[in-house]
Length: 343
Image 1: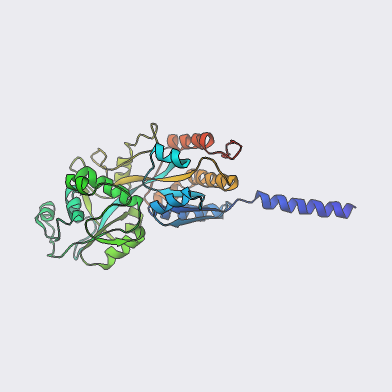
Image 2: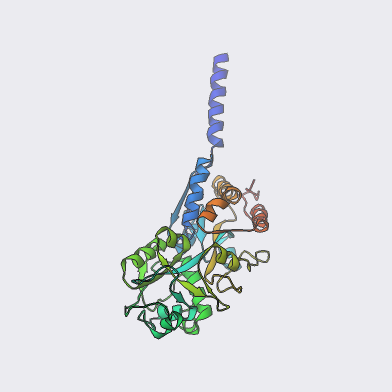
């Protein structure tokens, strides 16, 4: 009898240990956020957390998957509006802020040696400026020797939050772009070759002589790409770096709403193409164990992932914003009985 009690206790203990193990979770979406989410996931698992499988398939793909409930969370750089969130029963919160940068493959041009303006970028992507020695580009770069080379425009082929940030910016600084194309995760591109994901755009730019594209800053750095300087809203020429991203992010009104667009922000040192990336998950959790683990993962990231974000030149959120996110988790993300799943 004593032996049976011992065996039962051992089995019960083993079952409790299994139940206490962290649930594996899956996410999909933003390639803009993929470098940091992948880094966080690896560190989280090494610290004793569950496995986080994140697939960078583009923001639009991520939104489709979370709506279909085929993933536990989605990543998107194109924030949803309140009515869109309510329609699908979703909650949205930001994780980090990052910069989108134009990258080029122009013979003889070094990183940050070339300066462009929003007006000129829009005209390039409209197909109006076709050569690298176009007078509009030469006027911005009188000391740079520009070749008589065709411009090969590269843009996203998939639905993309990075494209949302890019086209939102172009719509603010180029009236022709706003009237003819507009903004969105997907648009009717007037010209160009489409690459899938940030990595696909980077690969095309590196392969095509005379190319120009746009990628999240981490991809430009990791691939040692030639990035350009930009004229910002004050007319100041700025380079992409942590300080100019922070200057742009400083104007975010997070206390009013998590829906924030950070392009063409005021500020002498502000990089003009900046955006936050967001996580989407269901307010009513069919799988509360996975929902709770998703929140635990991002809670861990907010507490322990700042250095990893800094290393990749993302901007961490202010402590006050993170505190509000945690409050919102408890208020809005619940199990079938209506109980908050955040610890």
